[in-house]
Amino acid sequence: MPLDEVGRRYAENLYNNSRDEVLEWQRGELSRIRAEYTRKGSIRSGIHVSAQGNVLLEMIRKLGEARAASLLKAYEKSGLPFDDAAHDEIRAQVMDFVINSSTAPYGLLGRSHARRSAGRSHRILKRQLRMRLSTELTESWLACLATFR
Image (cartoon, rainbow, N blue to C red):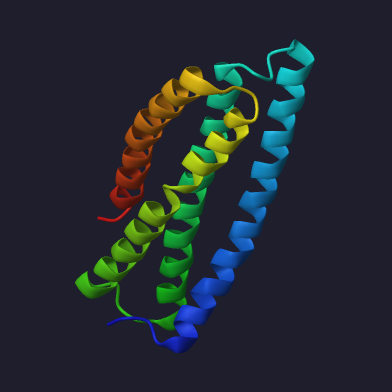
């Protein structure tokens, strides 16, 4: 049996609290990375962009886990049985979330790197980032799904 409106709102509130914590962590990590690579004089490097990508992938993983955890807590609190329908509902929501989140790193990293480089090197790096992020997001998505059953 799916969650009722009250249960969905409860899950959404739990998720929003977790999301705020994850986004605060992300901002701190990106600032730390920017300062580190500025200090090293390699702010324009592909390694810097890769480090940013790692943070963004971790953010998506953490948010996917937070989405799943909030829905599970809502089911526990509601007293509803965790049956196949509940499993499928949570799985679908986590899948949708991870898939919809997967475009964010491309845009953020693309804009970040485009300001620092131009032309062919930018296109090559962007293509490499897309392949890497696609692979790692698929792994993240599968990891989120593995938490069920």
